[in-house]
Length: 290
Image (cartoon, rainbow, N blue to C red):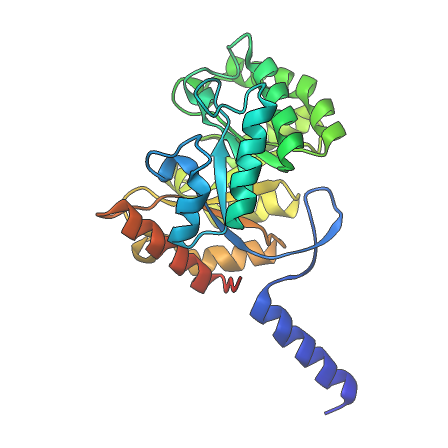
C-alpha cells in the first residue's frame, strides 16, 4: 500500500467517525459542521418560548433547541433586546446552541393574510441578528395552510419577495414549512428569486401527504434548498418509527446536508423518557459524538 493510499484511508476513516469536515453552508461558504441533534421548544413541555428550555434539553441529551419567536409573553423576543440577551445567556451558560428560531404563530395568524406578518418577520430577522441564529422556520399549517390555496400562495410569494432582500443583507434564511410538494415549493422559491428563501423539510409531514421523501430530498437538496430538517414521528419515538431513518441519513449525506436534525413529536408514554431516547437514537444513528 502506498503512502498516499494510507493517508487517504486514514483521513476518510477520521471523517466518517466524526462527521465534521469541510462542507458548504447555505450560502456556499466552506465551513466545518457535522450533524447535530436539537429539539423544538414546544416539545419541552412547559418551556415553549422560555429560556429554561436549554437546561432541560441538555438534560435530555440534545445539543440545541429550536426556539419559538412569539408576539407576547414574559420572554418574547419581539422588540426586546433584554429578552434576547436572556436567551443568549441561557444558551451560553448551559453550553447549548440555537438550531433555529420558529414562527409557529403563523399557523393561527396566516402569513398570507395578516397585515402585520411582514413586520413580525422583519423583527424576527432582527432577533436572529442579535442571537446569531441563521434561519427561522416559517410555519404554514392550520389557518395558514397553503395547499390548494393559489391566492394565499400568491400573497405569500409577494411578501417573501419584499422580505428576501433584508434576509439576504443579514445573511439569514427564511425557511418555509408547508404541506406543499417539493415541486410546489420550487414554484414559490423560483418566483421569489432569492437564496434567502428555502424549505424547512419535515419527513413526517411529507410522508403524511403521500410524497416520496427520498425523491423530494434529492430534488430540493440537489438545489441546496433544504434549510433544516425535522426528524418527526406522529405516534412513536424515533427508534420505533416505521420511517426508514437509516435511508434518511444516506439521503442527507448524498445531498451534502450535514447540519441540524431537529426532533419533533416522536413521543410514546412519558415525554421526557421518549425525548431522551430520541436524542440517544439520533446520536447513534448519525454518529454524533459531541
